[in-house]
Image 1 (cartoon, rainbow over the protein chains, first blue to last red):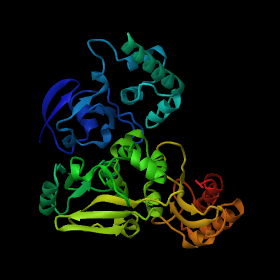
Image 2: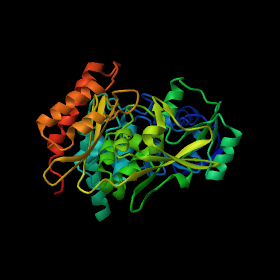
Image 3: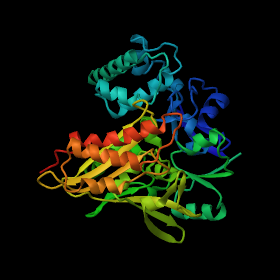
Image 4: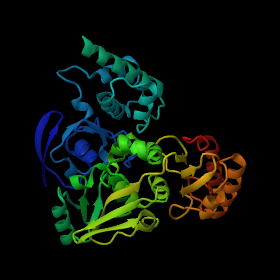
Length: 158
Length: 284
């Protein structure tokens, strides 16, 4: 079937198998390997992408469901060569260890900050509770999201 | 290859179901697509229900709330009417899966999956919820407890869908309580869960009690002898301890990879004791 979508800001028309998992479509067919696959059953969050701005698990979506949607993967988060504030904060706070959970963590955090610009640490923990980091580097990840939230608010004030 | 149909209206859905009566229906995909991936089912045709507006939304009237089966768990959690009227459901939804699962999974999907561990089931059992089943030929209503027939089995007939859940308002001053025991805080399948709806008189004596346990039987379990035992009694630790003995006798848990039956039986009773803390101070 043919689907239309906006992928990382670019309108695309694609011929897809309707039952192709979105994680496979993105990684195998489009080479967007920033999308990771962990459990393949919705329990780890590494395959998180943004669909119409909200975090979704690409292992539990079929290609046919994307028709008419706007998709953002980690590859599409930087704008005009500048990292998204959440990406920059992950670097600055040392929130990346092996890096496998990082794209999903960052996109889940972007979703949170879009909806809730002033999250408490507890709200950050809850919002990221569907994303597992097997290096267990959670403290720095929460620090990074707090830092990004502050910078994004200050950026708006400036 | 599996064909995927995405109707955007009820007429489109009915015609898809007429042409493809063996199609599997799904909404959030958080259960069906996992089973498909695990090789437990291989449907030739899937129908995705996520784009039918008539299945969404929460509406209120004098009697209670009508919850569209297509509402995601997150939509229900964020709904002010659900929070105000059905706190026991809100408490359960907060423990369901994880944020992305709650953003994708739907109420209708959780009910039609009919897992004894489904987190929305115990709250809706104590609230005596009704389900609206729609087909091309019309509508019928069933009590949720008559809709769920067994693990993974419902009363849905071919060509029929779950369209909405209707819940009456609990009497003013009722205590609504949900607790789930899992192996971790997020992304935990319940080992045992308990939903409670308890109404007391001004003296703190129980007028009405409804309890429903998850994950300790083939379906959600209500125990009438526990409910009867509490009538006229205060929600004290000693009264609840007596009720806990009855509850442990009545539940029918199994051993599985998450916990053994004896542990589940013990916890099923223990969860009642929490009402001594949360249930003793209703609005007077």
